Length: 261
Image (cartoon, rainbow, N blue to C red):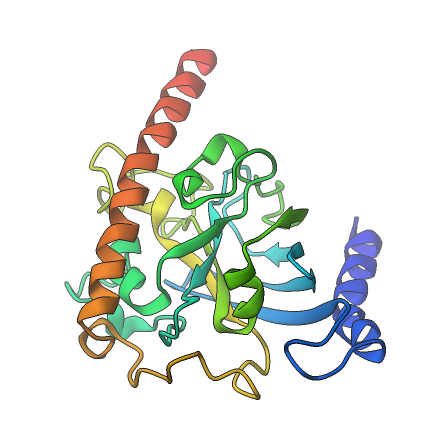
C-alpha cells in the first residue's frame, strides 16, 4: 500500500514538469497545461494532500491524493472560485464569524467562492451535486483518499483555471472516525452534523499569482468583510445550492442506517 501510494505521489509531482516540456508558459498556449495544488488543513482537520489539474482544451483531468481525512466516510470535494474576475482564496480562522472554533461551509463560501465543479466519482459534476455524497469519494480505513477523473469543462473554467482552487469537506474533531453531532448541526441543514459539511482542506493553484490576475482585476481582501457585496451575493447562491443538495446526504444517511439495522 505504502509503495503504491509513494509511486502515485511521485507521479503527481512529476506531472507538471512533464507537461511543461511541451507547452508554452502562456495561459492560452496550445496543448495540455499542468497545475499543482497543495491542499492544507482547515478546521484543524489534520488533512493534507496534492491535487493535479491537467487541462487540454476544455478537457480537465483531476487527480487528488489526500491523507488525514475521516476514514470510511464520504468527503464532498469541489473546485471553487470565480471565472468572472473575483479574487477568492482559502479561508483562515478569521472567517469563523460566530467564534465557535469552526469555519463552516457558509462562513467559508464568501472566502473561497461558489462551486464551479463537483468532484464526484461519476455522473453529474455541476454545483447541483455539491453534496451528492453517494457519488463522492470515500476515504480509506487509514484516512487516505485517491481520486482521478477526466471531465469536460466550460471555456470560462478553462480560461480561468489558475483562478480556481480545490476544497475538501468532512471533519472529525472528536476523533471517533465518523460524522456525528459532537460539534452541533450543519449550518446547511440542521438534520446533518456539522462534521459532515465543514471544510477539511483547501488549496490554491501553485504559482497562480504569476501571469494569472483575474479578469477585471483583483478584489482586495480575503475574508467575507472585504470580498464585496457581489461576492456575498454569490456566496448566498452557493449556500442555497448546497442546502438543496443536502437532502441527498440525509437520504443516504437514513438508507445506510436502515441497512445497518
